[in-house]
Image (tube, rainbow, N blue to C red):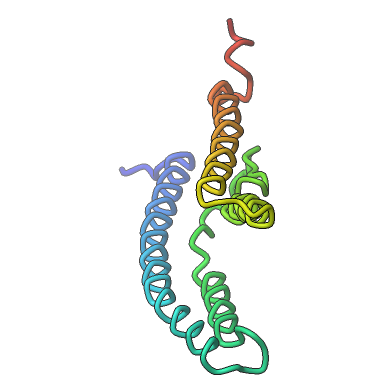
Amino acid sequence: MITPPSKALQTNRDERWKFLRDVLVFQLKMFLDNVRDFALMPIALVAAIIDLVFRGEREGALFYKVLRWGSHSEAVIDVYSAIEHHEKGDFRVSRDYTVDGVIARLEGVLVRECEKGGTAASIKAAMDRAIDQVHRETGKLGRKNQELRSDGTSEHEHE
């Protein structure tokens, strides 16, 4: 007589198939996301050129319409939906270290140097200092995160 698998064994199998499904769906979504991005790059550039040549209802109207479409399609694809029901964890990204945050910091340096009448060499030196500062700041954060163990305590607490 064949005995039915235990409930724990069935749960493990269900989790395994859910995991495999998530892997396959993630790969499909990444493919779709990349195809969308590959198409969006030239479309956005052409839209920007059209906006520069032909004035629309507002500056960049066509370009921003393409960006809205891209944002909408990103939400539809929802690449990372497989982790929506997982624990969030403590990982946070400071707004200062997002791509927009770093670009804003470098733009600020560039604008200040240009307003001071800086030369190309002084602008380059100021940009180098700003990038070095970002590296120092993110390096400190990286070392701090490396010291954290998987159980959330620092290495020093286990010595």
